[in-house]
Length: 284
Length: 284
Image 1 (cartoon, rainbow over the protein chains, first blue to last red):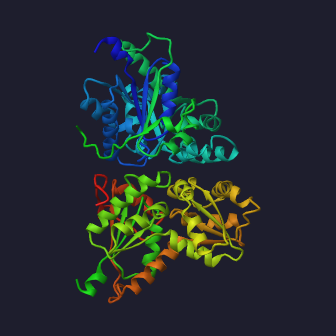
Image 2 (cartoon, helix red, strand yellow):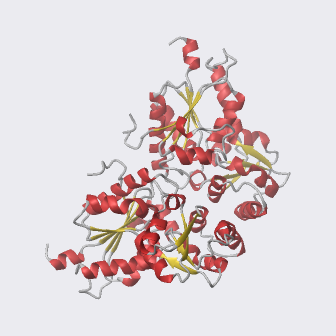
């Protein structure tokens, strides 16, 4: 394959469902000419309450589906899956760069903090496997990290409950163990689930102006750009907007409907392809 | 097999996760001597936001796992799965009685209503396939039925948010389209999701004393008792308490932890068996 053919290949992006669309948005914004394939494993969503073993297997099956379609880079646009599957997938596919959202999020939080006290809100799975805690301590050994599961935020984001007094009260109740912990005294809060940027304004109101919010969708998009530039795989030969293809593992209709809460462009159900990955034997 | 051997066989009960434990509770209460096997498909929970095709396949795989273990009756303790899978499963396994929760819930709501105006709250899946609407109209052709999806209640129930002013506000907001619809004017409300009995007290406060609540867990347990009595399969020879066995498709630890919100007896993680059903080819 010539280098221009390789550059024209799409970036593969996968998530348990619609949440990863916040990452897709950020990639579209930073890299408008890139071709993209997005896979939402909507037949098994959510990953956030499932075990590491199950999530790793689902990620392996999703990666296989994308790699069969030929991609130049694989982005795990789901914090729960990033937390457990980046290493196993990179090992399985040594020729392909595999990126998650946890590393870029940890980088950004370490840059943002001034007092080295960082909070992380995420799903149960991401909190309990301590992926962010470890990634942050690796970069900033003096940091103290407090993580708080906020599974309810996923449901709020999907229902389109993004603002208003009631949502603010719910967010405040979920965050109160973190914010009332005087020892924690965080000055930076990582939104460690791709659904949470949908609630960013309310979360910002609740934590107040002294706490910096880190949105890992944004930082992941910039990391993708750097990685492609280093590998000389940027698709920057044309000024044309890249093509985005959507795959899902359950019916496209709900995906298209809920996606409006997360993606800035309209998605037509007829253009979403449904595939079955549950029978894939992995690792390959 | 002798008739006493057949009576000693367990009742198989399955659900997408922990919600069906409210049905298991009710069966335990009405039929304390029965042996029971409960299967929670926690690797793919929830079903309520998934398509009818996917849910039917998951139900077929779950049924196969239970039937391989020899059962005398199959209870689909999940409204979403009951709505789509009772008929296909009954067809697949004509020798075995298959019962769902929608039929008994519809029966009870038709008995409870005085003005023939019935509301149903359920997951997106159960509402959109109109299972309750059809089941009620079959029994009471003059009825008018209004159904309202309340997916957020599932997350509230699993998080243990069962009471308090904030929960009441959330419930009121979710129910407001139903309650403010003056044409609907319901006097009966079906809790059409097995998670919702956990929020029963708050829902009762919000709807007020003039609206009867129908809890399909309760009515299903009574229907199970009637069905076993008719088939002369009641395990009433002993005064001993029946044995309950638990199967799950993801790690047992979260199931055991969240189960306390739904089941009246303690469940020890070590006693829960994890099985894989995703590779099952169905129909058999």
